[in-house]
Image (cartoon, rainbow, N blue to C red):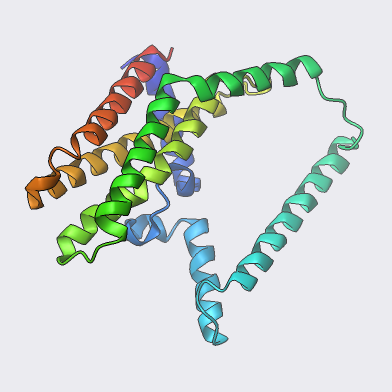
Length: 240
């Protein structure tokens, strides 16, 4: 491991203490309790669900969820207004750097063609078809079998989002990022991807052992997952 990557991992260890939700797979029910109790996102959601139940509503009531989102947007707008007042600027009069905006647009286009992004979306599509045929439309008999399918289902849709976020942090320029925040976030998201890949591989293998007729079917998803892991390892080695 090179010095740059070690430095980033050290920074991330500190960032994680304050905002563990930026380093997770969003599967709160499976999260360690020690992390749950210091995660603002988890505690806010828990409080919302408890409030809904106390008022006789479903814990994930859509109307209240919508109101919470609107409240968060209003809070964010207030924060922007406070910043603008402190800096003495009008955010609506700020002129964008057209050259910089165009550079970002080109980088975004390149990201969609990145081999790691492409293989991730390929895996998502193949896994979705597999889950649709073997899980969503069937009654899984045992708890262990259901858990393995749930793991594959959870991560097959999470991986493309986390991978895109990681690649954006790695390749999309930010001239104001003197502290390497984007690069730190990229490394953090690659770690989530590696966890997603590892658990998905283990679950697919279990599915193959539980149903020998599916062994051939899971060969391609496993190959794509291993390909993702290898590409991530190469990228991390090149950071520096």
